[in-house]
Image (cartoon, rainbow, N blue to C red; front, side):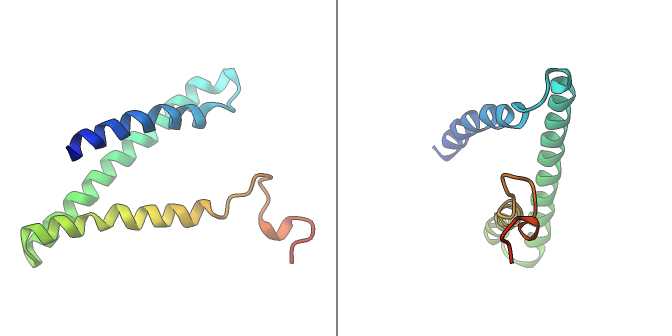
Length: 104
C-alpha cells in the first residue's frame, strides 16, 4: 500500500510542478526551459538515489540493516528542511528584505 500511495502522490506532483516552473517563460524559451527543468529533475533524482545508497551502505557497516535503512530516510528530511529555509527567504518583488522601503 505505501508504494501505491507514493505512486499516486507522484502522479499528482510532477505535472503541476512542471507547469508552475514553466508558466512565466516566453514562448521562444519554453523548449529550453523544459530541457533545463527536466535535466535538473533527472540529475536531482540520480544524486538523491546515490546519496541514499551511500548512506545505507555506510550505515550497514555500523548499525544493523533496519537501522541503516531508517537512518537513510534522514537524508531527504535534511534536504527538505534546507530547501524550506532557502525558499522562506523568497519575496514576491524579488528584492531582499533590506532593500525594501521601510525595512530596518
